[in-house]
Image (cartoon, rainbow, N blue to C red; front, side, top):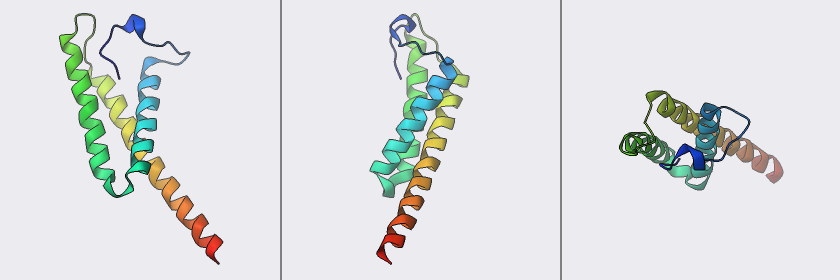
Amino acid sequence: MTLGPLSVRPHTPVSANADRFVAYVVLGLCFALAYPGRVYLVGVSLIVAAGALEWAQNFVPVRDGQLEDFLFKTAGVIVGLAAARFVQLALGKQRSALRR
């Protein structure tokens, strides 16, 4: 989620693709939980933002946008949205059980 040089990017023990995927899972999860009635809008917005960032990297001298990176980000968004739905369903069942 940056247009800066790779040298200023935090380094983790996992691959860059895993970093991308997890970052977008967290984004999808948080935004879907924050805006539960707008899950499709959240998903489309995050995927468009990911695509825009990949495209913009083509204009930064030390970066290059890649389809593979975009696909990992898109998969992360989808998994994050699904995880949010799972959390919402689990919390809904828990709340209904508490009301009994």
